[in-house]
Length: 85
Image (cartoon, rainbow, N blue to C red):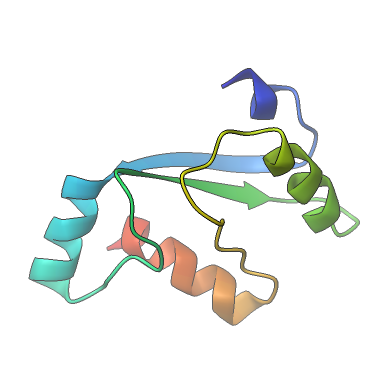
């Protein structure tokens, strides 16, 4: 939790459990881009590209698998689609 709490440029943090992802896939037809018990969506906002900074922070995190990163608008929308549905 503290890893991202003090990081500049974070505009949104959303934690989604596997049950919510499964319900979204079943009822709305929107599948999560990654599988796992939990998904943490991180939205960045800033005047500069903060992707490298986030990548550095993720190196220190204990992740179950490789993160999915939306580096362009289309990929970002796909990542947030599960949450929006």
